[in-house]
Every structure is written in C-alpha cells, then in structure tokens.
Length: 341
Image 1: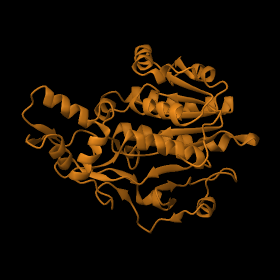
Image 2: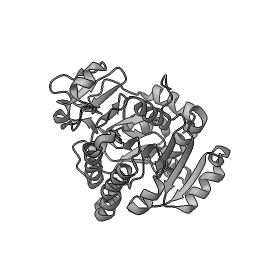
Image 3: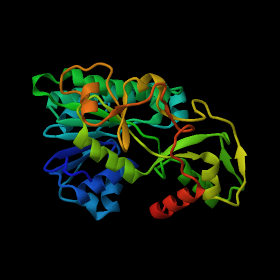
Image 4: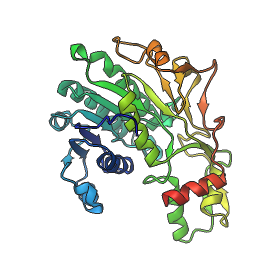
C-alpha cells in the first residue's frame, strides 16, 4: 500500500465489479483502505446476488449494488452521482467471440468507454482509471482494437476537464491474469478433470506476460495515488513460456499443437517502438505519456521526469519474448501454490 490512502472517505464505483478483478479489488478496498462507499456497477443480477452471498465482506454496510450497462449513459449518470473514484473494468474480452460478434464488442468496449468519459465529466468525478490489456498494443484482433480505441478515449478525456481540473483519466495496461475466470489455467484443469489425455496449445513458441489478481488490484490502488491524467501505466511483470505452464499444470500429460487461433499473437506487446518515444521507466513500472498535453496538470514529459522517470532507450519495446523478467517452472510452481490456482 502507498504512504497515503487514495480511497480514504471516497465513494468508489467499479464497473464490471462482479468479475475476477472487481472482487479482488473490492475486497482489498474494504479490508485495507477506508472508503466511504463501494459501488458495484454491472448488468447481471444473478452475479451480483452470488457475489453478495459468497463472502461476508461483500455484504458490508459500505457496499452498494447497482444494476446497469455501460452502454446506457443515462444509467451511468445516475450511478455516478456523488462518486469520487471510478475503476472501469467492464468489457467484453474473448478474442474469438470478438471476431464473430464485432458490433457487440464495439458497443460495450468503445461506446461504453465514451459513456464512462461523458458521465464522469458531467458528474465531476475526481479520478477514473480504465483497465486495458496487452492486446491493445499494436492490435491484430478486434478485441485489441476496441481496447486501443478505449485507451485513446480515456486519454483524450483529459482535454475536457475545464476549469475544475477534474476528472483525471488514466489507463492501466497489463498482461494475462493468472487464474482469472475463463483463462487458460482453469480451462486446462477442467479438461484434466474431465479426463482429457492431452493439453492443447496453439504454438510451442508462444510467450505471455503474467500478473496475479492481487498485483493488478494493488497496481490500480498505487496509480490512483500517483496519476496526473493522461498516462498509460504498465507494470514490470514476468513473462512465461506456454510450454512451461503446461509442464507445471500437468507434468505427465502430453501436449498437442492446434495452431494459432484467429486474432492471436505468438508474443504479446505492452509498449511498442512508437509508444516508446513517449515512455518513461520507473523502478517498478513504465508510463506512456499522452502525445497531446491539453492542460498543465497532465502527465507531460517534464512532469514524469520531475517525478523520477527516465526516458526509455531508443528502439525500446516491452514484449513478452524479449522481457528481461522470466517466470520459470519453479517460479510458477511457487506462485501457484501461494495463490491456490
């Protein structure tokens, strides 16, 4: 936790709050911080009910459950009344589903982002952090393209804050979340429980960035404290070979190569060479500065350097295959044992 409490006496709203990230973030917010109120904004009444029943902390007196869809701006305006901080975690995320249903992903991930920005501006929310993905860097699939567009919308939202200097909009971009709902580890384990005789992988050369839900939640807390507006924050996290992951999950089970799926990359990227021209390195993270600084308080190159940031080297790229941090099989075993994933 940072030296100050960015949530103290604040009303915090989490879109997509019943998801894997939302549950961890909200549990941490109530356990380790001192918010005035925590609001779940999501569209599924069953998931809200199940969340409330799953842990006494989710029935805390400070908790509120608000049904709504980020596609509905009027509902967001109602939900954002009196809100200080917003974490925008709601999104459609499955890459193959996006290729087949592009309009639905556009409505949620792009139009929904527009609605979040507009509602936050109209209600004068203090700070908004939107969650992004490594797939938004040089995207080759529809999901990644919608998230890149969403990132641009949140960064550009800082142009409209006016004389009140609020809200501040920033973005957090990270890689695959270890053990999150619908991710590869739970899927492989279900296949093994169902009696499969081999694990499917798309390509033996494939690498991915890895982050835990706890690390992702902490990174958002930290960035509420440090954000100026317009930044894309990228954590320094390890990479992992997909073959090593399979060997840890099922060491005695053979793997079979099924080929890269539509819209899938061999290696992931979080900072490309073009973004590197505006990127700064800190001890535990990188920051991509906005290309256009709309008012003096935003995260300009000068501000980031004054905070201790150093411009990254010429030609720098932060990619999962060239990362200098690696999670080997022993490291992954230790991590999984701690997480019970």
